[in-house]
Length: 239
Image (cartoon, rainbow, N blue to C red; front, top):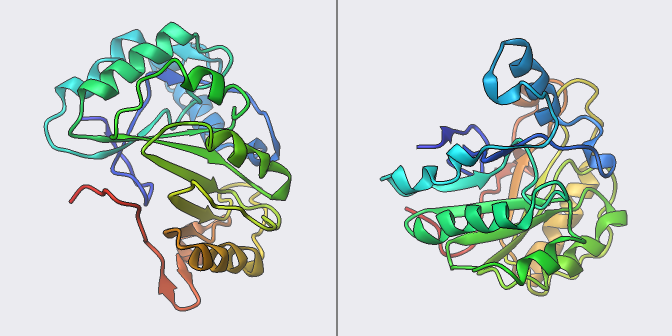
């Protein structure tokens, strides 16, 4: 099985690619970059190159050995649509996901401009979810790129939410996740920003998932928004 995850909206992570680089302000305090540096210092062989993009061909067929169905976050330590990940490798990753039909795979990218062109070369079986990150109103254009992908589930990760998202057109979007930034140097999230996204989801009938308030101590800050935990999922979900 892939590595068990404490990320609230998934069950496990799978990293056939590691490493990335910063592409927008949401990357400024990247948890994956910090973790990669720590793993490199510990001598983990997969991080010999630190946070440089690295393909792990030996992990591509890993899902085919998993038995218990899970939601799986693909490349929590990278971005499958990074320019340094060649199309043949992306196709190999998709072939594994296509064959592992009992699992639901959640892919997230900030490389939204590359996404539509590459997506046309891929087999979007119903168990593959595709998402883009939208950290504030300046990056709403990524939603238009996402709408061009024929994934069964299309979703937004509005995390870290570092400014107002503004008016969101959620046509063709099946799920929205919101969360504040966590860890060293975390930028605070105004509660009004989170409420605004939630209210737009409710008005447009889109499931809303509030992941965290964030901060240096995210556990202390909690996950309640206006007195409740919001953990709505799109259909289908694995039981």
